[in-house]
Image (cartoon, rainbow, N blue to C red; front, side, top):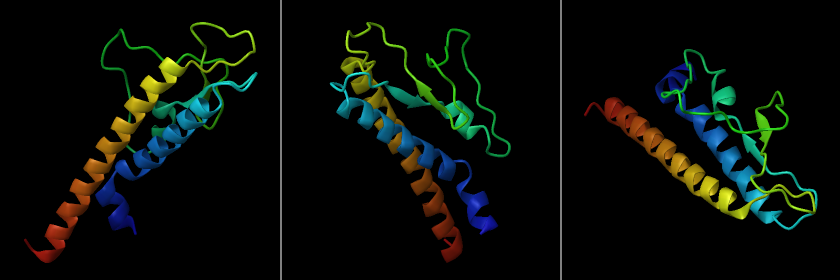
Length: 128
C-alpha cells in the first residue's frame, strides 16, 4: 500500500479536502435563507500541511488568509460577511457562487493530476 501512497503523492489527500470544501459551500448555498446560519469554509493550507514534506505558503505578500470568526482544529472556518444580514445569516450568494466555481475548478484540476499519475503507473506496469 505504501507504493500506491507514494505514487499518488499529495493528490489523494488533496482530493478529499477539495471534496469536503465543495460540500461545505453547497451547504452554505442551500442555507442562504436560513436565519442565523453561519457560512463555513475549510482552511486548505491547514488541512494539507499534515502531509509529509508538504509546506503551503503564500506566493505573494498581498495574499491574505480566509476571514474567520473561529478557527477549529479540523480546519473549519466561518466566513465574515461583507454585508451583515438582519436575520444573522452570513451567507452571501455572490461570494458563495464564486467560491463554488473556484472550488469545483480546483477539484477538477486535482482529478486531472491524479488521472495523469495513474496513467503513468499503468504505463510503467505494462512496460510501455
